[in-house]
View 1 (tube, rainbow, N blue to C red):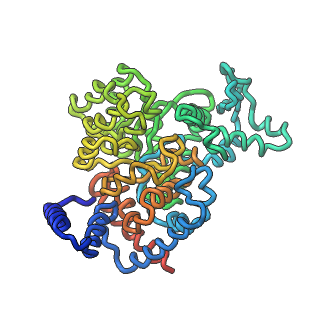
View 2 (spheres, helix red, strand yellow; view 1 turned 90 degrees about the horizontal axis):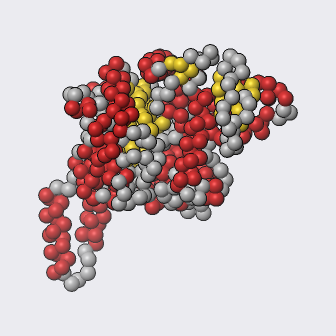
View 3 (cartoon, rainbow, N blue to C red; view 1 turned 45 degrees about the horizontal axis):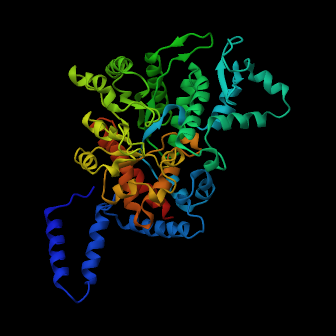
Length: 503
């Protein structure tokens, strides 16, 4: 992040005086100096590349130029239409191999590919399905015939249903469509934010009965870590609702059970993959709750953070920001930790809106007033200069999730994303993926491609990528010493990636 120094200001002032007194046309040397000064302020602008990195950067710029001139500019297209072009891109191939550090903004029910859910989980014993009046499905595991749900067909044992039909592929594909937002004509399918958000939350409800089955809950988390690890991610922070999980006989497990399960899964995964750093949970609740419920939830969050300090990072609200209650509504609940002398870090979603001037539009300011550690999305931040400056002074980064912002209809062309202006002035930023499984995206590589190609065009370079991956660990919730060691490991992996990419 570039900080404007007194020397910079004096130089600019001298340049202004010189330009105003000269009538011989601009000096090319002054122009070049201005270009260098502006470049130094961008994300990655103060990263000094070594000789091998400079060679890779030249290669990368040629690959970028090819993508920009290929006839299809993926960042200008909806991701659902652009994905096939991105997947064929040499830039994307390079980004897949790049060590990406951490994914800091990922939701629990949106991190594992839906193919795995359908082709693995729904084929397990005792899995039932019912078909709703809204043309969606619900799943449940049960040792016997489950009780009927309102506005839903009778429950069908999936094993028996598949035996009755000739081709179960069509059935599986219908399940996949229910679990994702992917469609070949997204503009027609999702003409407004409210419609796409309704479909978005329906997909979570479809996954709910599968993922909250206790044995699947553990397997799902392990598979999620595996998929992120395969995308060259070494650490994950997961926003989790921590709903009650259930056993085959219907018995329910509480949040303590879920936290212990997360601990066990992360420990087991690290034993199998020692170079994986780990994962932590950010406990979340829907922003539609009332003030009384919020007090109880924050108290519960404080207890969980005290009892599971190694695995629980903090607390956040989730859900469509425009339709939910603003952060200031919860001021009594959110003030509890400080009033009681308890440390409960916050990681607030804020500014995931284009509704300027509303109560919700103040969430960015209120997130900082409640001392948030990071800002989830921060799409509206560029419209709030005072809040933006405060965020920068407090060194509070925004967690940018490019594909999510586009699919949920905040921006149609990635080149117009407001974070482009923030990164042009070196505002602290991390790249994440929100709910990649629902979008048909990889754990993080597709979002990196959209950010790298869309937000900065040809002005972004290898130094931009390097700062972004370092930021992902720098702004994590890890203890400072662990963070320092993690960055050291990341840089070793980075040097290996650079060398191998030049072969």
